[in-house]
Length: 147
Image (cartoon, rainbow, N blue to C red; front, top):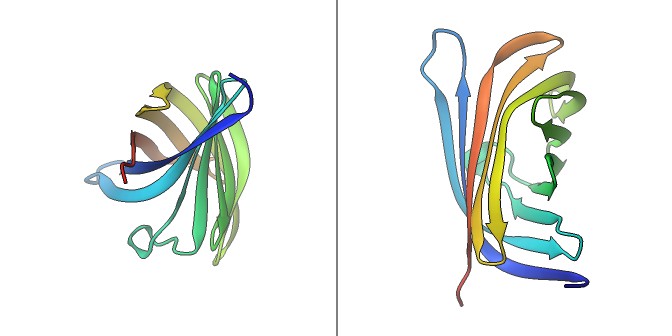
């Protein structure tokens, strides 16, 4: 396969954040987006955030290649987070209230995605200004959008 294949998809995003001694904070989003499968096997999932996530006006993109997933947000919130199992990556997280340094340590990264859809799961700990603030996870399901 050469070039890229882009499909309209429905994306279900479930995010969970765990903080010491607190009930998990959960968000769920179902939205329309796109999935692009590159000729080299890389996959891009992209969708618009809504007011439900508090990031209205932001485009979220997951770029999946081999053992690395890069989460890029552009618009109202600007950030890039790199998830790679067993590794730690630092990034800047820019919000309307200021910019902070975020360290991401990925504990689980698994996906099964094809042109028909599939699943992406990421678990990670997050440290803000080098203080661990909790454990987070994304569970993302993708399915082809039928017209």
